[in-house]
Image (cartoon, rainbow, N blue to C red; front, side):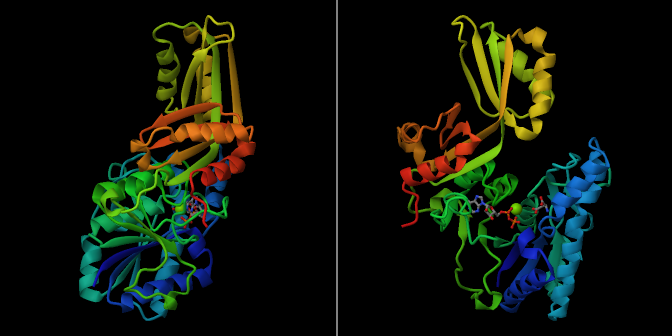
Length: 417
Ligand code: ADP
Ligand code: ASP
Ligand code: MG
């Protein structure tokens, strides 16, 4: 007998039929004798709708009220799934974040889980064989007693955190794809499903734009050593052997992976904006005069490139920020103009970041150089580059995103054969 967390994303609970389908997946595992906690997302599209309502009500709304509104989507699906399970004759009870409680930081809309009391859930497994159906994405701030949410895609993190709290054997993430692929299978049909991927590689894939798992959930999986299994909710529930190994991807520690390729996968993100501060006097303190105000404004700077200006005397600094922070970043730099002392500000929002990831890169030279050559052969211009031990990222024009991803996918031998 195992203890399992089963998480179902938005498309898996998009309507009552799908919720009934989820109930059958849960029944299968309960019938096999497992203790089960389920974590659900809101119905697909619901959270977007709730977010839009908040913005429509007032663009500068109170983050505490935003959380009160957007957490409601998961309240609905957790209750409905408990009803669907009861209809199948399974003991089930729904739980919202505050009821467990899932204690989080006070950072509304991007709260971090601090502590989960899994005791009551475990008691109920033992005493009543009761399935816990938990609303994902939400918690409660002990300081204020108010509902918090964990950031978009946060139900993945709820699931892994609950798995750690109840000492589950595994955390299954059921979604609309049957695993983690070498790149988004919706963009590259030749993408290949990975049987296993190391936490580290998955962390990079997720943080560079592969939205299949929220970054924080992978971080938690890594620190708590909780195996995460990504699988499809669209397979017929009764066709799956609860003791077998269904199609899917196991995210686990590096030691468990026998075969390691130099490149594991490619991620991309179109939510980037580029800002170039032109003709700054090249002296100590210039970078600080730009990046300290941005940090104070809580703007995350990603890629940074410094080069000599066209006049040959001054310097240009180019950096990227999340597209959502673009206007604020420009405003921050403009306000600091006297202190920085620059001639011109150029910017672009039609840029995309392509990231090539693989822990095998640690021991291989020239991996990025191959990409530069392949992209130049397709006449794709690279605006900025960053590299780290197991990843490099390239900033290009958005229009070339798909072409660049496909080109690199083939280049590194990732295509399905
Ligand atoms: P859920 O609603 O179940 O949380 P998401 O939409 O958040 O699902 O995540 C699943 C989606 O992630 C897939 O439909 C797929 O398009 C996308 N995706 C991006 N990169 C990858 C990848 N490397 N492997 C698998 N899916 C990916
Ligand atoms: N419903 C939330 C969102 O759409 C959380 C999640 O689905 O993981 O962001
Ligand atoms: Mg998701």
